[in-house]
Image (cartoon, rainbow over all chains, first blue to last red; front, side):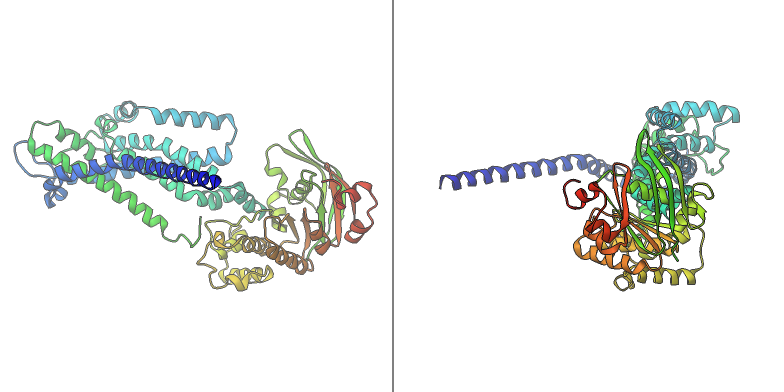
Length: 290
Length: 252
């Protein structure tokens, strides 16, 4: 009887500990998600009322006139991010493939890995200054091209290191299976290893994309901003974060509201872009594929 | 058709570790040959020297000669050419996880630039029939991933993948050690059927398995081949004391 009672007590304690641990986990989850949700709700509260068709079709009005939109900034952000992805994604993935598949243990690989980590820690304003010196000064003027280069360079380390991590997670047995079939190493890397790691690599690209999509500092003295329509790579171009920055520090209530709306649109567009890529790349995944 | 394998003074190293020492061996064509011995005795290294997978490890080194048919594989050919003629099945089933069942079997051909769809269809079907998997997967060939199959099915898929490139030799490195008894017996039946067309070398820890499937058996110990003879002789009347100790379970 004594033994049975002790057993019951132990079970109670175990159940309580389990409940407490679960509770802590749920609480942490809520704490992590809460700021995100709060920001989103606040953006909708502040910005949704200024969203109308004009916002998406018109360019900013001069000071004093009300209305106007951010059509040029939305398109400009698209151009800049497209350019940045064209630079950051292939270079980053290429670097990751080198680190994980070809350079393992070599001095060059260690140097590349170290450089990527340092690059990842470089403040974005410094990146803007570097591109100012490397691209803007030689060209003699601000341009969309320089903005894209600045954002692209910022994408490289994230894409590179996540690609490397994801490739290293591919079991060696899979590589050996390909080599044992008489597949040349380069082909095995591209067709088997990279393909097996591709969901993770894509996630890395999306993280890098979402991160630079909101960058303002590196664009201040590269893309510069533009209150008129421009999609030329050779001229200053508008971008959502820049436009939000200009509007938010202005003294006009009208512009403040547009800045909130711009922030909301920026976040929604990032979420849409990431979801779209996820949807497109998840099609064609087979039943039971891991 | 299978071809014989002639191994002469083969030595192999991992770094400074001399894992294979002076192996001389003739593996007959169109038979199954089993390699037994305790863990770490060098039998896996030995089969990996036959398709030059050993050297994919950067610290690995090998000397001596291996002739497959008329071809001296270390002198006359590139590793990729050898590996197309010598198929390999690994201890753990390792299908390509992102590929369909069909693509897994066709991988060896497709990745070497072979793209005739009609012939690929035929080869995939024939290979899956040869590995006794066809009836279980024929309706899901392009729908399901290779990784969605059970462990035993995955291993037969890997055998089909190896057969699809039409090798002359099939190396099997403990092909059933990760499988349940039912799947194991299926793999053994398969080896029995396949050895009329291929030269099979099977590494195994399971001595009953060696006795069931192989005509010849080699006993490895500490990187050397202690004894090589007909399976019957090895298991009933071995000439070396160490072989006898091992098969009677006195060590290993």
